[in-house]
Length: 198
Image (tube, rainbow, N blue to C red; front, side, top):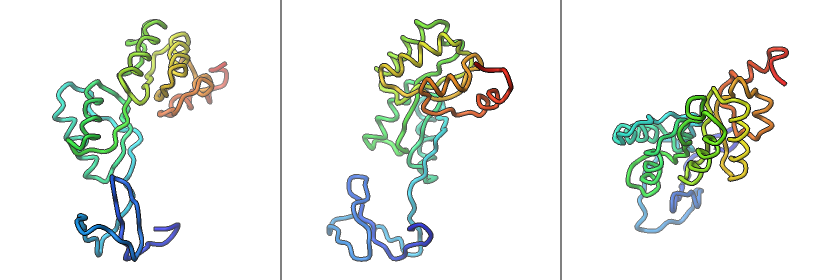
């Protein structure tokens, strides 16, 4: 498609996982895998921006979930409740060892139970950055102090943070701190209550 119309009778050439050419008169190698798309539509892959891959130690059910995303046309996911096995799964997908979408994942949750003090929050940020997670997932229960330590450290080491806004933090402070995305509306609803913030 362009902006409004379906473009018919096109040949699409893909090399190394990327579209390299498209048109009615394109050349491709004799040994190329040809998929006949007559009577069908080719569309871009979909991106699931708030996926939940089970955060469990058994990798087999997680492989099944990832293959279901791919089978449904979802070629990219943003995993929002991370687990150490997700890093392994991401690597397996990248090496074409299993079928699945491009997998961006958070590490395990930052919340009022996992982060009892600023030192713990700082340590967790550094550990998750070092482990190779794509971003941090923040859940409710963080205090202003623990949130401040987490957000400052995340900005220092260059790892985005996303998720819920803790009641004690508030949406304005979250935005000012550099949240990459606020993924639940509750923080915004709380900000509408007169006198609740600042």
